[in-house]
Image 1 (cartoon, rainbow, N blue to C red):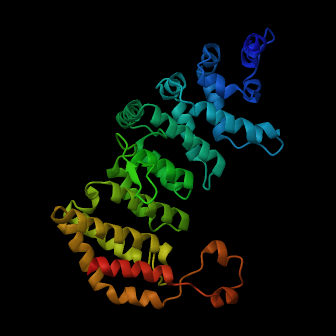
Image 2: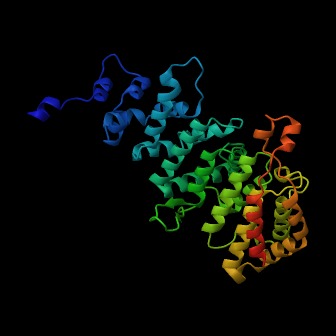
Image 3: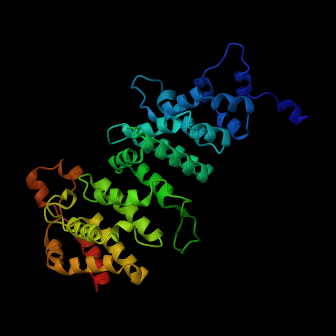
Length: 368
């Protein structure tokens, strides 16, 4: 009796069968929309997987609402649209990855905006892209490989061409959502570990952005004027170094370029001219993190990377005085803090050096 009283047509089915028609916004207002998607409501999925409908869902994910838009348009619709697109439903993912729909290109068009990106929207876009990868890593990799091959063959200016896409990702590397997306798709997703155990990375079947393209681009970002971009580049590079069985090729060959890259890394660490993230004589701590991690990996790998270790150790030995001078040099206050202080007040503020000294001790320990 209980089930007979409460069983019936869902509000979603009622809306889809309405003779007066319905709108996408009416569906997004329904609280049980996500549950109906996950329960494979055929009529609902037929509508949501139409290219035009999926494109409108993506619009909610990537477009900033206007100030005079309704509260639902500003908050609810973008969130629900991202959840629908991220659902573990094959038919939704298939239409997004279909070559003819160009919906992935539309999703990634958010990267064409000027930095900084709206944190909420880029977070939603990154969530959808990660969900596409997790649903079918092979299809995801094959889809982008085909797109890149087609763009290269046509010599087009498509925003999905690998060089252009990498350039836009680096332009927004200061975003934590972009960092998380690149970490999951190019290095691996952290695997849950028991308390007290080291967390491991589950490497992807194939890196979304090939490492031979990604690593040099990240290396250049270590000297970015934006401190968040430099810090995120350092975090991604150190994670990649830890997860890779061998050093990235750009640090090993060809010999001349590898030596120049190692020398450039040391200059970045010391804040040499032309590397604004470490200006003023202070150390570039993100670059120093990469240097220490690179030395650790050279030691762990051993004889397979002697040239990289030799170049780095020689450079550290030649610059050891400069590293000690850097300890005594007051660190610059971040611009986000110093701009609110008068010049005299900024100079008088204490500059903690504990982090710098700990990182230098780690460097000297590896060098010795």
